[in-house]
Image (cartoon, rainbow, N blue to C red; front, side, top):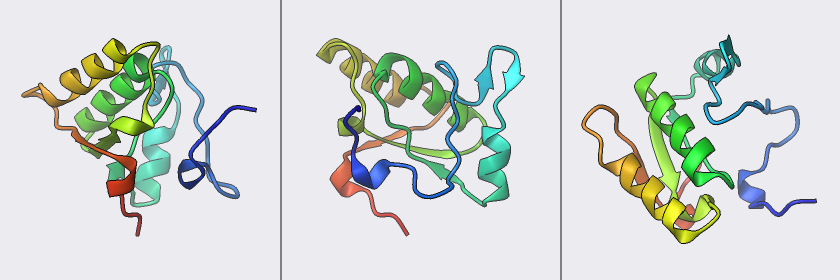
Length: 111
């Protein structure tokens, strides 16, 4: 069994989307994530994961480009080394095309 932050784990029948680096698309197929989120009125995403330079980065960018507010806790992502995490944080905050906010897990407040 893998380690996870209990506060971030899926609860009950919450949907879990499985894809590669972009959770909105799997190859040329829509994963349905955007519809799931829009149908529930969700406007802010908090991407976390163990592939900072892939899953967190690409999902964050694609969510932002789709109009979602994106908040990434830097202690909620992990790459193979510190460079991947630092590069991801830099890329996420250095664009003039999309907006992503960096934070830490203890700064998140869920309502």
